[in-house]
Image (tube, rainbow over all chains, first blue to last red; front, side, top):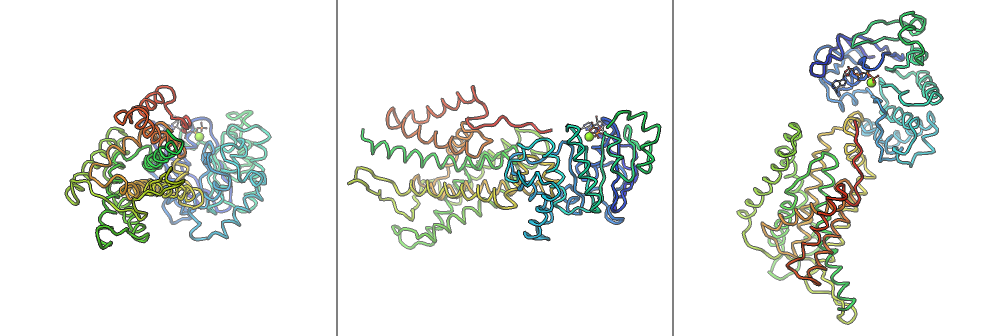
Length: 239
Length: 305
Ligand SMILES: Nc1ncnc2c1ncn2[C@@H]1O[C@H](COP(=O)(O)OP(=O)(O)OP(=O)(O)O)[C@@H](O)[C@H]1O
Ligand SMILES: [Mg+2]
């Protein structure tokens, strides 16, 4: 579904990504794990067009080149990005946030389908339904994360990008978030998850990559990576 | 001094305040989406006033006849279209390049310059004189309580129409998809673009709305003050003061700021001296800048990374 080849991204002199290649097959959950500053956010922001790679290609469904597209056009091609730090619209209600998630598809699908999608998100995240008229900024961190994921689902994405959904959350809430990700996977949603919590991410993923200093160091089946001594050593106790 | 006279003064103050509020409301809209505003907003108001002068002159036979409501709405529409159209030009030549360089000075100077150009063009296209513009309600005061209370219908019109225009935009902002997108762009541009929102287009749209509203303000105020090429400058500055008093970040704040300024002007003119009518408002402005720089209703801008 998503194929990245030899991606290079720099911030001025800082070379944040140096030749990253990875593949997200249809219907799979792929994770990229790495510590602070490894380049995870940079990778996702480049895919969604918020950053311009200096080199490399990002192919959607084997035919659409995403490099060079503006972020709103990338979203319209079917890539939803649930950003680091959640970034819900704090002054708007939960429902409005979800409606905005459907901005790119509303014209095609129509009002009725959008209402159905909102109900669908409420089924996945029942807590959001209770709070649907509340301002998003007043939600707890965990609820905001659910909202951010729900909002991303509203565009009926072909690929869902998730940037550290565990960030700043209590362990029980992290459990819940990962349970939901597992459910989304059951529904057949293709996902690219980047995480610091290596073992949690590998626990739900099909396939994993380890990124360090902007380079992919290790890759393999998630179940194999979990037992890889190099991963164990680097992320001892990490989730 | 009678109670009815006070009531009349306050009414005039509210009418004046609503004009400031209308212009300031436009400042708030573009400031929220782009952190910039159009310092020639007053000149857009002036253009709106002249548009209604021309439309009424062309379509109403006789020098005295009152324009019908359909003519009045045509004036509003004409002003709004001209305002929105010129806003695209303003945004492309003055705002967009400045946002790229990130320099505040350049958009401030560029919008002021465009205002000066608009004034000069208006002097050539229309006139350097002050010209009267007729109101559909006429100019004869409405008498109440055996003539103890008289209300100027043109002021009544300003209050009602300006209120409706702002109310309509608030409904639009809350209920429509595009309106929600405007709010989303105002709070987080990157996140908005991830929703599939074309952020630059929404910013341009916010300028179109803002300038259209100012131009419609000209249609409302012209019957009271006449239309003149120089009418916009001072109104624009005072509306800016109003928005600083209320808080540029808050839609409600700019309206309250406008009303405070309008009423303080009317009351000072009556009880102290017309020569000092602008003084209290600007003293208040200075106090606000010193003690509460975000304005009465300002939320300290939430910094987003
Ligand atoms: N705006 C920026 N300007 C300059 N350098 C940046 C910028 N953003 C990120 N970097 C650098 O790029 C590198 C990768 O950063 P990135 O945010 O992608 O890391 P990350 O893996 O997401 O980290 P974290 O787990 O802390 O979120 C880091 O060295 C960082 O300092
Ligand atoms: Mg990150």
